[in-house]
Length: 254
Length: 311
Image (tube, rainbow over all chains, first blue to last red; front, side, top):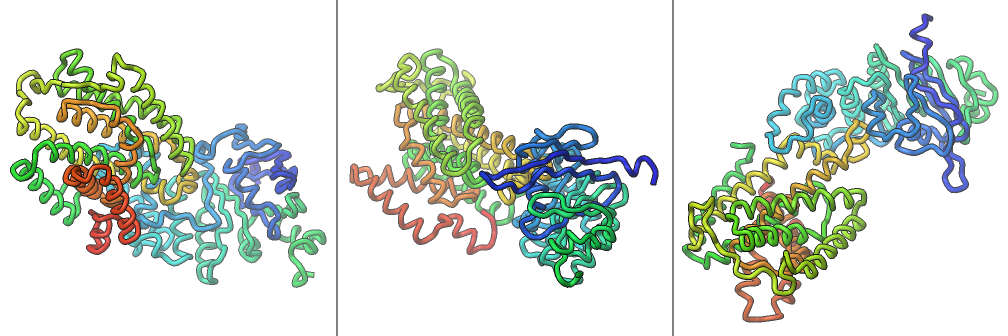
């Protein structure tokens, strides 16, 4: 591996979050390498999503430091983190239900291109983003659904739409919160394919429950239990770790 | 046309026809009062319908607009259009300050803060007698000539002015909702955390909407002061704040034409039920209860739902 690949994009040291007496994330130090797919796994209640919310600033850490591309982002606002190119998805599909799929993607294109504050202009002005938005929808297999209301899309398609919206920002660092949660087998396969294509030129940090997804995709896996890092390494190392097997993988891997 | 849907375009044509015909059938002062309150309600609906924020203090901007216009025209002898524009600016400035304070909170807390801030303005209006006339209000505001050229003393002349400002207000509100900005506000209402994750700062958009609502309230207040020739404490009081919310809910929250219909019904009731004295408020309350029970979407909202087309 060359230098550029091993450089850390996102790092945390001693990241801790306490909720009145309960420590959800306990002294977690992560290092996400540029260009890699890094997975955060662990049993329910391990603190994966809390960790995710801390990284994207939706929660303020009780202690610890987060650096993104060498800058301390510990005290930034969530919108500012997004503007720096670190964009997250949500565990519960986050689409704008009362808008069409095309409008969903367009909303992400609008801000950067300076078409979000003009209240005196017609919204026909937004049509110039249509080609780009359609291309993004096409990319995730939603081409025929451009004019469908997002609320009417199936669950798997909503997730795909959410990813298309996220990709509209072309983020160098993508954070996916359980991208395949609650999906059918076919949808999972489609999302896995999509993630494989997405990795070109970007770094991905994902929280995932589905081990087969993680096995096929991740360069590096961090296992969390009870808010602490239990093990870290590639799939082979982690899946053979006895502590991980007892804590997470359970009897079928024993 | 202009981004209006077919049903909206038909409604707009009907509205224009009604506005033109009204002074030949009803007392022009009542029709003008309806248009002033309708403009006020249109602004309030930007906040209630588009952003989803209930303000219980919109009278502060409406009243300030009226006082500003009244003071400039009566005491300084300026022309009406300056008074009305200044009323809008004063409303907008106050809205910028109060919006900055109130937007930090959500739901009921937002409503309570707007109410508290409006009460401060009310007591300010009682005390600052040099500007507001205190308990007496500003009496006998002259209907001087528009731009110093067109006399407004005749009811039909000032009616034309009110009608033009009102109709521009309707088109403006429609434009705001159907603008790139309006699209962002709709998305924030749909899913705020998601907008944050896309790098948006929702508070900025809410503040702009708050200011726009305050500007419309200020213009409406200024216009009303010109029409009535009088500006009183009741225009800045809590009852007026409640009245405009009632208009929006009755007509149909989140619709373009709902607040107009709401203003028409509420003002018509006040006027035609005046012989019943204090019972007007009881009747108003009764109608409001029925409205909430039977058609929650409001009159125009219910119609739009039946027609499956935004109105």
